[in-house]
Each structure stands twice: as structure tokens, then as C-alpha cells.
Amino acid sequence: MSKKRFNKPRLHCPHCGEFMMVRSSQEVMPTLRKGLVDCMNNECNFRGQFWFEIASTVAPSDMPNPDVHLEPTPFLQKRMAKQYEQEHQIDMFQSANDANHS
Ligand SMILES: [Zn+2]
Image (cartoon, rainbow, N blue to C red; front, top):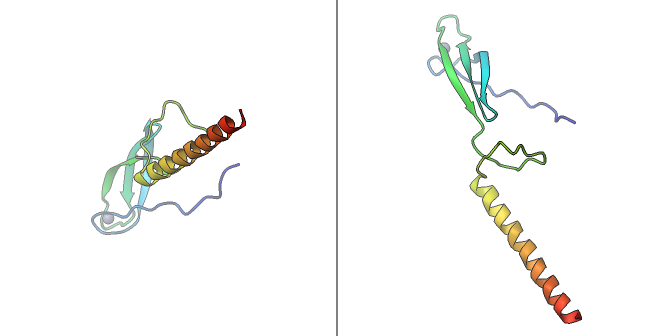
């Protein structure tokens, strides 16, 4: 049911460039999390707050949550418009055929 896991995205410390570890995180909204990250470099010791936001839809969900409203990316908007256009053209042909047969 679930997809194979990809490599985890890694954050780099903005000061020294070392990897950072997520110390804690909490859900703010279904599309937004906030948390703390620690730099793994013992000589740096930077700690930061991060925000992780799902900002838009690239491919629509087959199980959409009615409470989640994410704008489609420009690419998806074009694809949806094209699909709508094609479905409309098929409807027009079907209407023409129906008219011819009556
Ligand atoms: Zn650092």
C-alpha cells in the first residue's frame, strides 16, 4: 500500500554547512509543520527553527481531504485545462453523433 521510501531530505547548517538533525517537530496544520534542527558539528552548535510547508499540488490525491486546499502548480493547471478541453471536444462529437442519429 505505501510507496518505497526515498532518501530523507537533508538540511545543511547555514553557518558551517554540516548536516542538521531534526530535534523535534509538531504539526501546525495538515500542510504545515514547525520544529527545531541541531547542527551536527560540535564546533558550531547552531540550533534553528524550521518550517516545512506543502505549498501546492503537483499531482492531485485520489483520496482528497476536503479540508485541504492547495493551489495546483502552473504545470498541473495547464494539464487540467488540456484534459478539460479534450473531454469537452469528445462531448461535442457525441452530441453531434446523437443529433445525426435522431
Ligand atoms: Zn553548523
